[in-house]
Image (tube, one colour):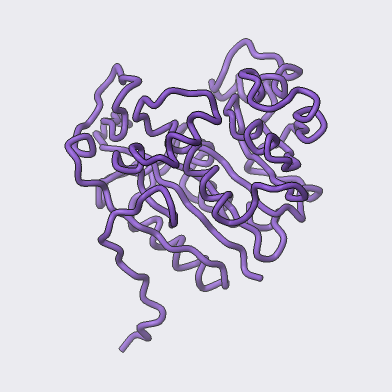
Length: 281
């Protein structure tokens, strides 16, 4: 008989936007006061959009782990033009924001026509943080997430928002999750959001975007736990009518929680998953 302490718990109760675990986006979470509070800080309206949820999930997870205060250091991977760094700097957190260089990005077809020198300025384009404070606390570094430099270490936390699924294949995406922990202090926290498919078997394991299944995340959870790290995953999909609506191309800005994806002759229903991992002490 297997040791019951090694069996991952199955959580059937839907999580809210407080007391976070690793969890899926649901409509209920987007209606809570704490969710509206974070959107206000990011100067955004509530579109009930899973991409907004990813930003809120990351910020709330970091707050719940005591990271939003002066003296803390954070590392952002694949930050693009997201507002997270500006919000964190507003709270006095020192941030190293990273992105892959423009030449590599264009080769992969990610973006066109952006200037590397404008990356840092873009992160505070809405004036979320005082300009002087932002430039004092936030720095920018060119980093390929498949090759994390050895000089990035001893951070209190790190994060990425829907970036790791673009690393080439399932193995590389999984490897990044483990490698990102090496940049943290003992007891530090990694918060990542990524693409998740509701299919049990069918998925896309390589290419521009990969999609994790529950079985893939369970295996990552098992490996992390075996190494002494802490993670608990809730796969509740939500119970409202909005949680059962599937957006189809061209995707809408509003009520965009679950969507139909066509990849390599496969049809998948996808959504967003947030991961919270506490490194072993």
